[in-house]
Image (cartoon, rainbow, N blue to C red):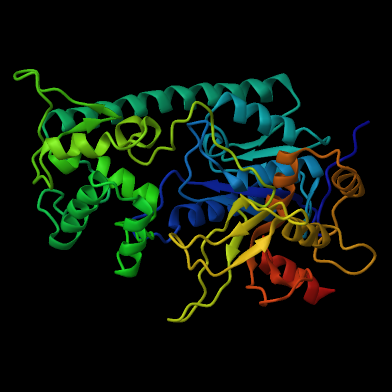
Length: 444
């Protein structure tokens, strides 16, 4: 007979609360996910359960397969493991609606496999407990998936039609204002538009986007979303058809049916069409706005992925002259050293450019944090994970998932000039669920 679920001292089944919103509020206060967790706690108590761990994906969609949901992946990893690192056993999941968890068949399969990885788990919905091991429970979950897929397609079609209609009327994008224009998206921004015009002339004359990005950073220029300029964003800005007044939709230049010429938008142009064509000709197809679409990744014939285990996790910890730390993500790149064949570097175009560290040193420090040996450590991973990691059996992506389940990121302290020894203390971890880990340490 299958064992019964774990229960707390009050006789309640411990469950995990998952919350997700596709968009945050305009104030960026994460109110939607907070409300979902509040409802989940009430729903759990109404059905004999108690929330012992929370997982939150704020402003993250679940319809497209290229959207990352770190908290959802973390939840699945903990369900397979059978417990959260500091919260103890997890014997179920509660959510305000099925579509918060999954909107795609792949995610539904992954979730059900993780939920049923151990016996006697429960799924808690607004209507009560659902047995995920029975045919009825699976059919109910599949029915909700079918409804979510149909709703997602219908919503996507309505949004696409709305944007296309606006484009055909020559109206600007409804997203945050483009760089170079005021909030009305029609009137030129005196300073930004002049920067764009000079950048186009600089590129046509043979200049590099790195030079433009560094100049903009030195001038204190930031993007309309607050980001620091880099060569890729500058390229996207100056190759967007809007700079010469043309209107595009979903990476396609729209044609006026009456004139059979490119559709002209209802906003002021920065340069004439001839200059836009000339600057686009200086880039390869994979860099052009028209081949990428707004906010889309580069098209290179394959999906880009990290090359090094700690890529995307390490941030520059160098102190800035104006106060604070750089905080820029550090990219990985090859070096000429045998001891350190690759390094993580803070690029000067995006960050301060004053911090670099050996790649193997970072990964050795991460391994020491994950598997502290006989001494005390923040976490204690299962022994099979340690054996597979240290024996070399664990695959690259699985190592990254293990890192992601434990750490939020790592802050890299600058090294000392002339030092040839490896200093593992330069790698400062920022733990996931740091508040719970600290509480557990204090209780111990």
